[in-house]
Length: 258
Figure 1: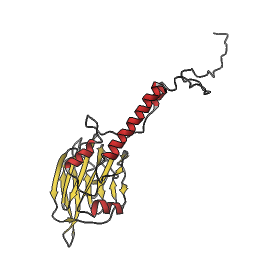
Figure 2: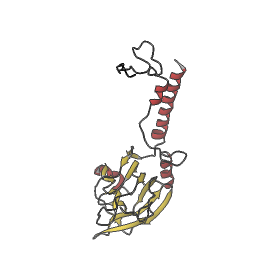
Figure 3: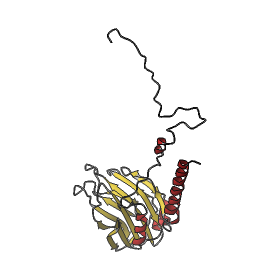
Figure 4: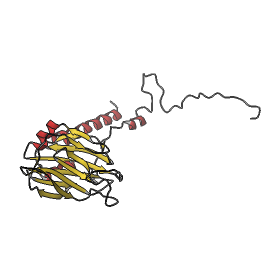
């Protein structure tokens, strides 16, 4: 076995070990990855079926929803009845919303709107949130423990509020994105329990590099192998090395003016 083949074999083994450690052994207890790739936010997309949402997010005493969001400049002309567009939502239950027309150039007005019931009528309780930074990946986590909601941006708790009434429980899907939004979402994770801020931070750290920037998922690129593997034709195979110039298909002609 040549040294080069040994090196490639070693790289493959290291990648497999990293995957096992990062995504299997140290995966948060009870965490369910429902969006692992990068998806656009310009249309509403159901990412968790109603029965699963009921089981993981609505049926118990606590829950966690978290993921990376990257917001670009939104549509300033869209007409919305309440002036907000849901970014992440459980229909008929709670909505993480942002204003389609940012109040500032690089930020947008944000709130968590929760439907509650005082035993007689439904109400809309609002938890005001700081603007979500734009044009950068931001890790957002929504933690629920009974009537209390905590919201985390990256590694900081930006809101913690106990509602006056209990949230409405209506079986609905978990959705992400909406018309009027521009941006991307990645690594959406749910848990049927309210995680601690330390557990949330541990999950976030598993998806960022040493510069605290999210590691975007991309297909593996083996093009670098062309530099050495196919520089010479493997023995016994009827092929030409790529270093050979392509055949010339042009016809040469003579001119009396040349």
